[in-house]
Every structure is written in structure tokens, then in C-alpha cells.
Amino acid sequence: MADERRLDGNAIGGMMLELFGVEMTTVTEICGSCGTADVFAQTEVYMDAPGTVVRCAHCKAVLMRVVRGRDRTWVDLSGLRTIELPG
Amino acid sequence: MRTLTLDAEGWPGHRPGQHLDVRLTAEDGYQAERSYSIASPPGEPLAITVERLEDGEVSPYLVDEARDGDGFEVRGPIGGYFVWEDDGRPVFLVGGGSGVVPLMAMIRSTSGTTPIRLLYSSRTFEDIIYRQELQDRAGNRLEVFHTLTRGHPPGWTGYTRRIDNEMLTEVAWPAAEQPHVFICGSTRFVDAAADGLVGLGYPPLSIRTERFGATGG
Image (cartoon, rainbow over all chains, first blue to last red; front, side, top):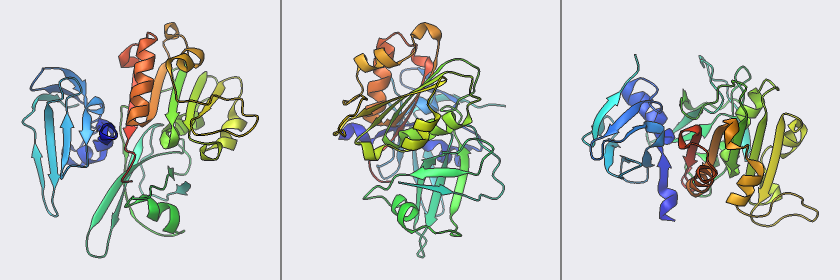
């Protein structure tokens, strides 16, 4: 059931709200690998890894990784070219 | 399955389709957090409908143990993508299992003039969530189509198979009517329904999807 592990960016709306302070599922990201623009809600999300892994729905490249510890959160954004925040 | 009404102080209100996160903290500080779709329409007491997952960390508590007056952390409302704004255009809702919950918030919030069709897949007749309410609400403006994938009672007149292209062709609004589409369910369910609708000529961007995991809730 490998496919059932794959969620979408709606699932990380709460975590992203906490990290960025704004509603992020409607925010547009551009993939650093293939250049495709998409809203976070449509990204592919895996939450059963040691951290949370967000992948581009088009080329499957890793966009973002988030690992939460007891008193800190580690965020790797190296797979993203840009994100376009509101305001 | 259980619907819980939450008294969330300072809740700013929500839009149909949004969810919230529930965080439970154990005595040793261990935290577990899960997302639940909001079942209530805006303006009514905040409610979530929770399906109990056997290996879950949060849903067994919410379904079996939580009592009136218990407290836990809630974060929300969350999400701006899987959200319906009623602009009068027809709406096609496709739900699998507890994926019907955010769709129910939409149905409950309708003004009654917007045409809505719900295609709802459940395992068995007993698994149909909101069965009576859907029956009561169905009428001119709300058409409900059920399909059962693991057996059906005698005299059942609905569909009896997984959602497929033939079913979508029979139930979905013609793409030319530019309906809003919301699909919620397991990943496999959502992918199949969305692919089918794209095959029927629905623009991919008109289809809003929300996937949830089959385990771990």
C-alpha cells in the first residue's frame, strides 16, 4: 500500500501555519528542480518518515523537509526555488 | 465513528471544507497531533466527525474516551484551498468513507439554491456516515448518489462498485456547466476520481482534492 502513504499539502496546513504564520495551502511554490509552479495543497506529502517530506507533484523532487524535535524544528527548503507569500 | 462538539474559546469561525488539528499531550510530554475535517457549517457550534482507526494515536481517544468537559489543544481553522465559496455554480462533491465530512460542512452551509450532487462511496450500508441526514436533505437542489464497495443489503438501489468512469459519466455535471469539484478520501480514491473527471473533460484546476491516510489517525 505504498501509494496510501502519499498525502497532499492540505495535511501540512497546520504545521505550515505554525512555521510561516500564514495560511500556506494556497501559497504558490516553484520547484527548484523542474520549475513547475503549484499551490502547496497540491504537493505530495509523506508524514510517516522521521520527519515530513514534501515533494513536487510533477517531477517528485523533494521540495521541503521538516523535522520537529522537542524544543526545535529543523526546516530544509533547499528544493524550493521560490514561494510567493500573501500580503 | 463519533461526532464531537467543541467549545473552542476564541474560535474565529471557519469556512466549509477547512480542518483543524487536535493535539494530545501525554503525562510524559509525548505529543500526538492529527487533522480532522470540520463537519459543522459556519455559524453553528464547532463539530468534528472522527473515524476510529485501530492503530491510531488520537482517534481512539476522541471516539472512545473523550467525555463532556474534557479539554485538549485545537489549532485552526486550517486550509484555504479545499474550501467552497458558494457562487451559485453547480457543485460536484465526491467523498470516500470519512472523506464525506468536509463535504457535509459544505452541504450544511448551502443556501439551498445552488445545485449540488454528492457521489459518496462507503464500504457497507452501515458505514454510511450521516445516512439519515443526507436522506432528509436530498431533494431538488441536493442529489445524493451512494455506492457500496463491500456488500449491500437486499433491495439496495444504489451503485455497488468502486467509483469508475462510467459512474462519473452518469453522475457528474457536464463539464460545460463549469462545476466546482471537491474530492476527499483516501489517496487512491481521490486519484481515481480526479483522473476520471479529467478524462471527462474537467479542467484539472477546477478539481480540488484532499487526501488522508488510511492509517495512523
